[in-house]
Image (cartoon, rainbow, N blue to C red; front, side):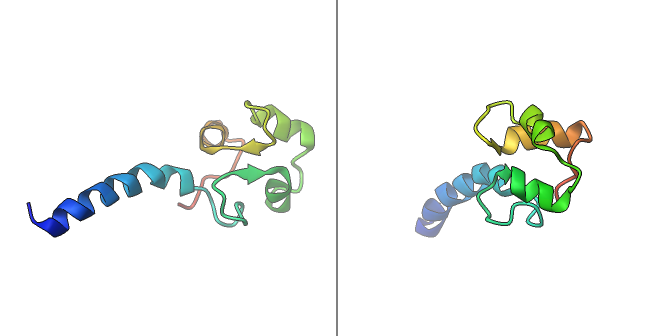
Amino acid sequence: MTRTMKLLTPLAVVTALAAPAFAQDAAIDVNGDGMYSFPELQAVMPDMTEDDFTALDSTGDGLLDVDEITVATEAGLLPATDG
């Protein structure tokens, strides 16, 4: 294995593992933090209420993380991501 390959292999692994965290729809995740806030969702889904958002926020932290977004998307409650 060449020196370049030895240096790039760990970077490729880290990049591959980090990708799901950034797979959210950029049209919704306007601040790019990898999570959806209530205001971000309400901007693209005006009918979304705080109660709806709270029901999706299983961790109760006020943000939808990648797992919560995946569950909601698979259930048809959020639009499919473009990433």
